[in-house]
Length: 581
Image (cartoon, rainbow, N blue to C red; front, side, top):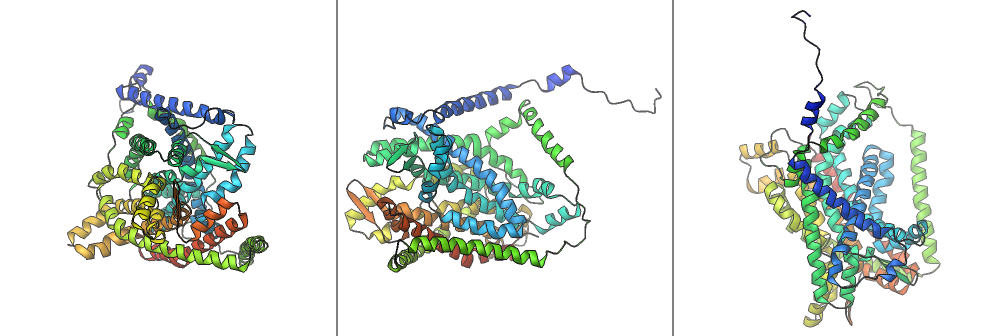
């Protein structure tokens, strides 16, 4: 062979490949962690496929030794719901953001669905899931998972939709320049850009699921109540027996569980998602996670993801190329098709309203309708006041936390625990305090509505502050932007789109929480505040389903109207004036 010719590359020998992928100490530690988690999942999964009679043979007890198993069952349900919420978010939010026609249906539907109480979902879904697996616990488990899903999905969907609608203009121009197909655009731009905010909202949704875990683990079918093993059912039983010791055990176990999945799951994901932050200069600080650093040093684990990467590459290779050239104008939509589409949407809306109105008017009178609207107005005042107060507290704190990743690492588990803290635990103290001092329930029961939903504002503001480009912050420091001017020109514009997402979700969640917050009981004491939540709770307890349907319809109407008149214009303002471009 002539010396000027380069030799052909020689593949590494099998022994060298074996040395490169030989398991290390980090691989052994990762194997122990994953093996332990797999055993826990299998242990909890065994109880999810048992005969339905096992729930009566082994009912939920207040024995603290059963709490670890109850916690395992609850966490498995919540992570199953989180997985379903993530898939739902990636599909539905992308359609809403990328297709105007789909967005005209999906966005109002999300507004309505987030206002429908969990009791409303359970009323219509329990029978369906139990008929899928008759005589088996799995049917009830799926109904419980679906109920938790309804408390997680809407927040994540709104967050992902907001991120896609506020993509930096220069990145979109790059996608057009490279003629990326929808799938490549989603994988190369949409998903990476929205990942940091989605991770923070997934944490919030996980914590928000704890707020309704009591209702989701006690499934009522007719005159029969099926109680699933879990922390929520344990807590409900402790409250029913007025056992403060058992309540303390439940709260302590909840704290341990939140710390565990924060360290093993969410903190590594936060550290991984930081690589997708949109900035043009290196960040001063980055979130840290020992578990993430451990997984990065493994040798065998990356090999397990090779098939996934190969499948994605195969899909991209088989995808047809775009025929439109760069710079060509998009094809205008057909005016006739557009009018038919708009007419079809309005026909469906009018038909739904007509069916609901017929059902309500045949069973109720005008007095009931006016009463429901009056109660809804009272609840609306509570929601607005509480959102304003929560925003005044959590927006400044969220900005300060989000700009300091090290502080966010310490605050993250605390905020998750506070967000997960169920309002039911505070009911006894609220009742005793109101009765003892003769306070007005209409005022002092109101904070219970915002107890679990105010954290949507905090988590979204933290996500927004952490996504402010570092070069923008450095430019503000260089030009001496300080004080109120810094808040007005840097911080508030940077977090505004994220704040709107959090406030919108907190508003809808507060309407939902009013059902359990406007009527509280402890022993023989029962306190009730005037409002639509109390109206729906009383109608549900009495089995008066026309009033339940009326209450849910009025709540959906108020939430949808408030979103359209307040939040959506603010959304549009953020997209038009405050997006990075």
